[in-house]
Length: 85
Image (cartoon, rainbow, N blue to C red; front, side, top):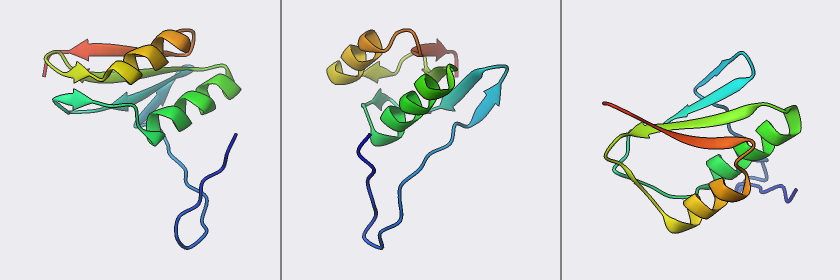
C-alpha cells in the first residue's frame, strides 16, 4: 500500500466511527457520497483484519459512480447501508 504523508510528513490514518463484533461502521450524513481516501483506507484495514466495513448514509443520499464501482470490486468487505435519518 502507498503510505501518504501530510505536509509535516505524518502518515495519514483513519478509524471507523463504531466497531462491533467484526464489523466497522462509518457514519456519513451527506447528500452525495464520493470515494474518499478515508473509505479506501478503512476498506484496506477491513481486508487486512478480515472484518467488514459498513458505510451508513441517509436513504436519500446519492453515491458517485467510482464509489459504486469500488464497492462492487470489494463487496466481500464493504457495503453501503441506507438508513432513515
